[in-house]
Image (cartoon, helix red, strand yellow):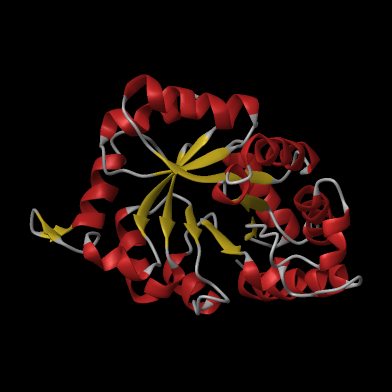
Length: 269
């Protein structure tokens, strides 16, 4: 999916919601355990309940590859089930040198047909640029994350600024706003404005809203740009909103409530 198509979906649905498919067998409603592939059946139900309210899905790859070959099959089936007009993110946090990155990219962009993949920048340019060579595919580069340990490295002083600022400046020499996004954590709301100042046109993938305590209003106020420029992720707050046979109704309400709030924020935008 290219940038124009993504923006059109955001405007059409009045939403910039990304639903995280971090499916845990220990947390899904128990009746799914009777299926041969419970994770896939659960994902189908989540997609059916949320597809009208979100513009992106983000499977966390760890929740699938831990199940071996069956997990990869489940992920492939899930990807095939997602409507073509919804943006897809492989939350894989890959990044390695040369051909290794190229083969990672082929896995997610060709075999699984994701629109984007999260990539770690620590190894530098030659670990990121192979992902940028695929037409209408995106790198979502880790910039300023929402986990506790983020401050161990990301805010260290480098060249008179912070390390995450150097990542933003340097990486914009590799990609552009049509193939490069950034992960910016919602729990660092006061710092989102700093990231936006350095990456005015780029989209941000924003985790941390909801269960992790981030504020949607703050993300909007500090992070929006002329094209909205945001994909705000919610995982646990949506996919585990209900339990039991009728859980889909609760999931739908949770997604719809966030979409309504997003539509309110976008009013007149």
